[in-house]
Length: 409
Image 1 (cartoon, rainbow, N blue to C red):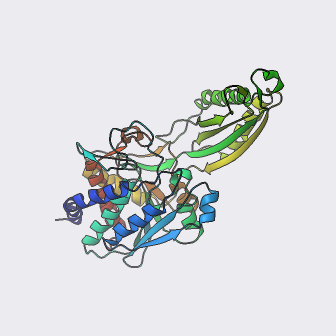
Image 2: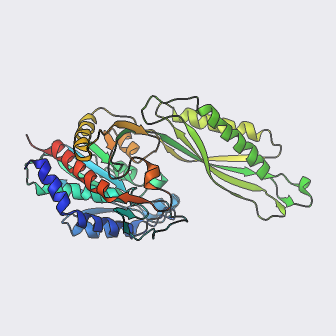
Image 3: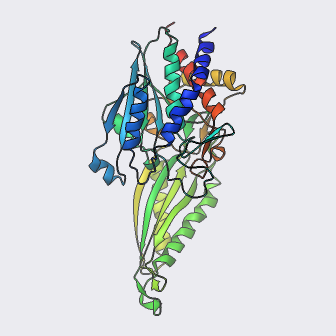
């Protein structure tokens, strides 16, 4: 048997254990917001200890977490040192959006039906807590001479931008790996992704009784004027094309609106939050100034309206860094062998924690357990699911890749 055969066989022999591990992770909710995620980190550390993996716990100070709008964050690092050489980090995030409505399976049940496991974060990205952990266990089962180290980074702030997850660990000097593989899907290796600008826009008018509306200034009408101007930008964005395969053009979405006090009151304040996705070729500063100009110009058409604009998040795009090629080539080679089809290297319109590693000069790629598309996974929708065979094979690909990157020749 080759080393690759041995790795595959180990994963197969321990796959039921891997699935049970994932079920336990799914069963501890990590809805973000509200973001009370420290209990999940504690449970993860407990489960890892059962495999002989000691997880270092790094709680983010409560004041920082609460100022960020969350409740608790404890990030985890597991360090496995095999000798002198480079350090490869494997990062996955445990925080997820709340389940929402429409589920036909319990969102925290980890139920298995027809070869799929259901539950919030089953695909994004507690699945890669499992694939990465069991890939490292498989690697160590070889007893082969290895050089370098592997670190598992399990963090809890991706949904809010990652600054208190990987960003916090990197800024505190708690880790500085040489290479990174981050949670992703199984049928492509991602080397670039979009950036994201999120902003909160508050439109102020003047409350009034609906019987005498002229005595007030309708903030909602002002907000509609601004929203129409913002949405009109999407037609212009379609004319801008990215040169990165898998990424098309910029776009803008308004995901939340609230305001007014009652049906018979002219609304004095309306707030909305927007999300502007930036292709890798765009300059974030130019994008933000352009959005602010559109808002200001639209507001100027509404006498009596005052607008406040606050930046909530600026996530820069991920660009390929020199040094990622060995990871890309290894994942593509083993992905094709295990899945029986080519694994393309491409970009994705999502944004991820990986950009924070890239900003720190750490070459990274995105690869893990999941289907061909986010749509298939039902991520951020009801009945999120993962095909167990994808979990098995992704674990094998990661284990094989780590072997190639760390084996002493």
